[in-house]
Image 1 (cartoon, helix red, strand yellow):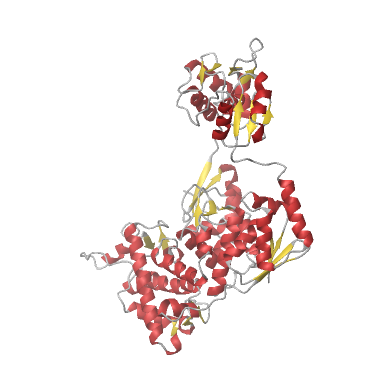
Image 2 (cartoon, helix red, strand yellow):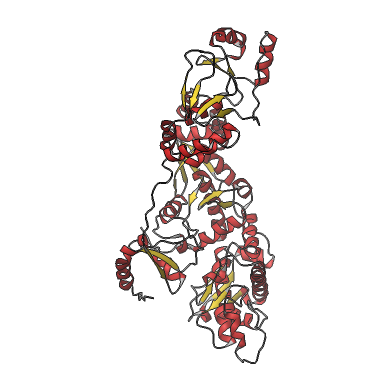
Length: 593
């Protein structure tokens, strides 16, 4: 297992990989994120493996090209984040686009959007917030556009369209390329320094230590910004290539050159011809499906609806299983559709594969959910045989003595009953009238002799139900008891949910005395335990971020729900000596007070 960073992907490889990335998240339905907005390390490891990038024990921050691309896909609306879960929002729109259009989209969202904040990545810069205020975001957009315009002009005029990275940064210095404007002049000769305090900066940045000159300030902010853009987003998007990894002491030796995608998007050259078709699908008798790229992502998305991905090495390897086919059937892919898809892309199927797909479908259809069906409720069980005979054309089935399931549209069932002399009552989908009346002693009185199946089901969850032995055709007796309340709590219902459900049935507030008893029976008040904590404030958020990846110390650090650049964590009092020992063993001084 390697621990090194992933190799950079070129433009066509990146955009093919992002298609696979979107399909993987769509297949998983959701990917858990940490409180810092990163994919959990174990999940990220499995994602890298499924993407065909091998086994890597790294965090998402150690794969900046993929992190940048994921955040850009969120900015594009392909992904969305909800309650620390990453989900696909609009996979089809992205996957139907050609690779060249995906490259354009990523560049546009970086130029105009707030998905990536370069300022957070700069050394010696502290950022108070990841998402900038509108004015700060506008300044960042202008800086990106100015840098891109200057880079395009320099490369167009350069021999072999190759530049020294140091020369380009020096060229920017001569331009009005500033992220922070000078503060208003006062009597103090160093009043410009105030611009580099977060309180004075519209970008919310502070430079520590405060620079001693404007030249130093430019190097540490604007110059560092330019270096990050060139070696980060522009290189990650596959638009430029660098002769070597840039470092503070080798910028004169680093050469910058446009790639084929960069010459197209930055200089207006002809669009590259990236192969997107020409691959094929092979179905083997052992139910293995091999997909040889290049194949359109839309074809692979459909294949992954009914086949489980096994590996992503030289060819994408899938397996047809009963579970994967069943999952597809729930989405409308029956055996005929699956067979037609496979034959369209691979030719005739092995006979055993076709036969097994049809057998699986027959087995799955032993339980069928009818989307158009209605339930007929009988007030008197004695009339059931006659109603069954009346509705015989619809193949009705008895559900107990008082209910019939009829797999047909409700209107057709009603018209048939009326034609044979019955006068059915049609229950409205929603009624503003309360369905029951609940008294102070917990007795529940049904307001109709034919309570709907939904009301009966709800009452079974909330109350004790007993049939009325004296009047078999009358409504059942229902009562709220200590046992019924505690049963609901044991099934995971909270007291608030229990009371809200009763209020909905009752059409309003419950009697106060009953409400007090329900609260007491549910053991609402519970107990509370106080535990002392210490707050640790680190010298920089980066220090805390690295410690959170340390398996030995991370379990002791508790973070509040704050942005990813927080520099504070909480430690239980009983763990403080151990945490202090671990910090000092890592060379971090521990100061009290």
